[in-house]
Length: 97
Image 1 (cartoon, rainbow, N blue to C red):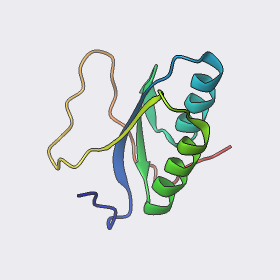
Image 2 (cartoon, rainbow, N blue to C red):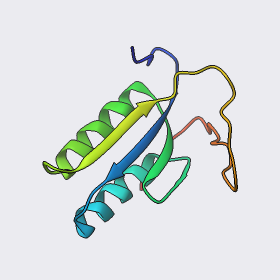
Image 3 (spheres, rainbow, N blue to C red):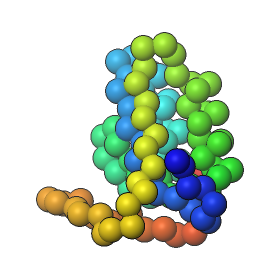
Image 4 (cartoon, rainbow, N blue to C red):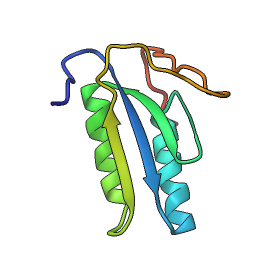
């Protein structure tokens, strides 16, 4: 079950969209909520209202056949980062603009 009772929850948002214009639009939406990521997978610390807003924006911008996954990271264990990956930072706010 999604735990949005806490102030912010870490989510991974990944997408696979074949249409270039729509993919760029989805990427811009996701990156406006993201604290890190690359290509088509981003980390987002979201409050309940930010989560709901992101879902509404993604639904409005996607079409049947698009694949978008917004997966909560529910583990309380330390996240492992390999290669050049860096840990996401919960800055306590989300900048949209």
